[in-house]
Length: 215
Image (tube, rainbow, N blue to C red):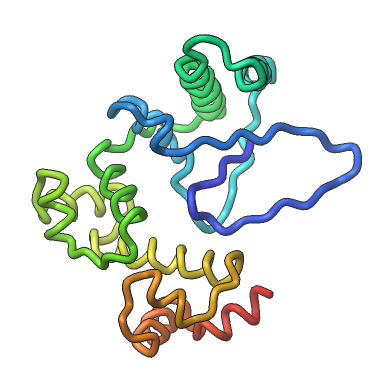
C-alpha cells in the first residue's frame, strides 16, 4: 500500500506484470467528524509531501475485499451507496493502520484541530490569510495553533503554512504547467517578484529554475 497526500507531487509509471488498485477520495467526502479526520491521518497516513512509504499489509484480503465492494457499489449505485462507500474506505484505513502497528510502529493519533488547520490552509491559498484569521475561524488561539504545529510538525504554524504554499507552488509549476506569474497570483501573491524571492528562499532555486529542473 502506498498513500499519496492531497497536493503531493507524484506520478505513476506502468509496468508489465504489475496489477493494483487506485482508490481516490476527497477530504470532504470522507471526513464527516473528528474521528474520520483523525483516522485519515493516523500513523502518518497522508501526512507526507516529500516521500512515500510502502506499507506491507499481511492479509491482502482486508484491503482487496472492501476495494471490490467499492467497485460494485459505484457500478450499481444502490440505495444509500455513499454511506456504504464511506464504511468501506474506513475499513481499508483501519486495515492499513493495523498493518503499520504490526510492524512495530507506535500509535500516532493527530489532533483534529491541527488537521482542520492544515485543510483550511490548503483551501485558502489565494486569500493569503494570517494565522490569527485561521485561529479565529477555528475558534482557538494563535498560541494553540503554534503548540500543535510544534507537536506535529516541529515548527511554527506560520512555517507550516509556508511549507504548504511551497508544496502547492511545486505542484502548479510541474503538473499544471502554469507560468510563474499565474502561480504567484494563485497562491495569494500580488507581486510575482516577491513570490519568486519567497520560493527561492525556501527551495534555493528560482521558480523558473525549479520548473526547468523538474521537466
